Length: 156
Image (cartoon, rainbow, N blue to C red):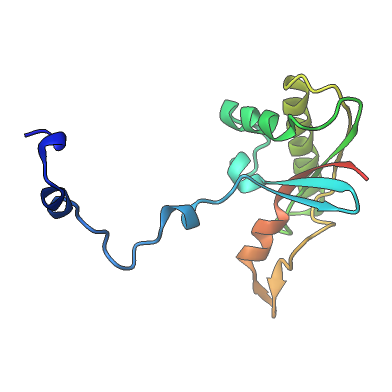
């Protein structure tokens, strides 16, 4: 018997409901980016944990293609700032170098997309956190995760 020959009751009987307590998939997926606009400036914040392996500045071909998609709408001739950031784990010099290398890698992905823009690239290490790396003298993994990012800003 094919699915087309089943009655509505037979179809309903063949469906196995999900168990309670299973997290819906949509809520469990970490987005690659967040986009915000403030005073005419648009910022795309790329989550480093999604794009890069720990301590690495190499992008996968899939991540490179995703960055190309994200910047597709930036008008030609625009100046685009690419800024790398890290959390506070590790020494300042290493974090500064890693953030610079990651920003350069994202800038290379933007160039590879064929976008006709002027790029300004900088690494800031751990100097510009958006969340506390520690809370009440304890490690704050959620805050550190938010601080590990590369931002793409333009306009305004």
